[in-house]
Image 1: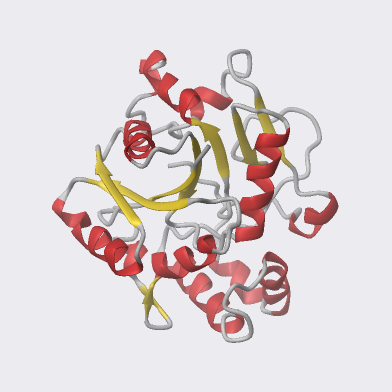
Image 2: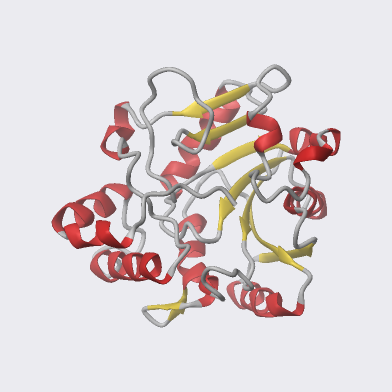
Length: 254
């Protein structure tokens, strides 16, 4: 049984072009993210999963430099890209990570993966206000999302053609919007993760001000501990309230 961390990234984003390779402390942002993902004990392989457009050639070149895999496929059909990447690298479990979520942490990845296997789910995600979750839940911030699901569940996207290449839907929407067909679980921000029960915080990098926020967090935390924790991030934000002004609180699934 092989677990792959698939970092979804592209360089032609209309909101912040080439954000994945913008420099933080002299390194591309996605390289800083790979460093954090590499520390996950449950992940066997890391795959930058990008498009076949020439504009994404730099991501393939960077993956070679970092000694990780790269898979290139459909720009628009992200789930098709993920399925084929998983098959190419013989992974039966997908950890889907977004390339504009560079602050995601290895410990959180391990927690979600273990929760997935322990409960034999088809799909598990960190609970945020981006999901159709009913009832009172303890929610994580946006922008540190971890999703784990089986390749079998991923392959079933073809049964939901209305979700394919739908700009208003996340690639996994056909899963979490059909709990009658899939065994779905959410890891909540409680117990050991209670310090992350901040649903109004947003660490995703979609605009220049978001990038500036993330850059400042790395500069504040990295030298003390290159794999700084999620608690370090929250403490940094608490001590530097101006960082919240750089977030933007509108959740974006895309």
